[in-house]
Length: 452
Image (cartoon, rainbow, N blue to C red; front, side):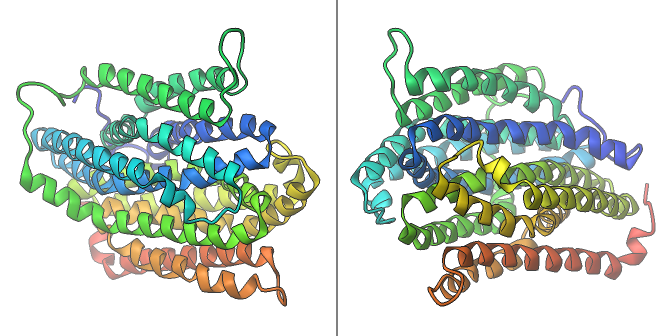
């Protein structure tokens, strides 16, 4: 691939920053799609926000399922590049696109067939919210293939150490989304107001445009489609094997989130809307460290392939220091300015009161959540994708009984749910970092050598 970046040499901090900053920016752009939707939809009221929030669980489930291809492909591509096997990297790319296509079509058909039952599971108790949720979900499924391919393209470029291209391509989609959202939601001239449906249409159209630009950009770097396209079963199996643990973790997390949302629904649409907005705000820290997570995975992946073990050790320590500094800053902002931040999305009295508590309780765990995400990337880079899911699934699942206990009328009510989320994030962050540090100590001799 032309223009690939060698992550096995040079200053570690500058290498990580050069790679992670565009990934962070790309993550923000992808998150901004939902944030822009939420800002405009928030003007329509909490029912519309609750509808999008409910439907988004199944959009997020699609993204979680796709990681079985995306994560495994990224790790294997990075290992191939580090080992100097460019032909093997391209075979992983082609197999990844074929698997993504099949998975996207099957998932979209499943959602379209069972859409009413899936939304009905939440027992929202409001026919209008349910109608809007189904409407948003159906339109979103039209673009699920575009979303899948775009995420795969981004991960491929990141594995090659070229994170600038995904940033530039996704920027185009965001800018168009910013323009289209208010036009399609509220209408202008001959375009009638479409409300929630308008937000979904704008996102689907922008994702299609991004895919077209990715395809044009990608042709200059690697071959995906053409007469020589082949499905390598062995490489596909290795990708799936690598991706299954992370996919299991993320899918389980979505189902747990759905159960938590059902518990929250007892407090009505406003509580659901607050959680949806809170998740969008919290995604600022999630997406920022997600960029460093992607960078450390590619960094460790290439250095693991090149057998530069000392560089892996130094890279993790330096990235952990950056993560702690960022996480502490986010915690301070959430604790000091909760109302000012939440007002950007919802400003009615009830939403603000609930939202301020959400921000402060979740703010306490931000640094630990960032530690967790970074370390997941470190384990992924080593190819040990099964380690993090063991911790994540166990303690994320515990949120359900803890939430039921703490949210009782005798204890903390709705705030008990936020507490269950925050406490589990703290535990996961501490455990995963401890496990990775133990791994480095156990392999101390290997990581003190820089095999060249």
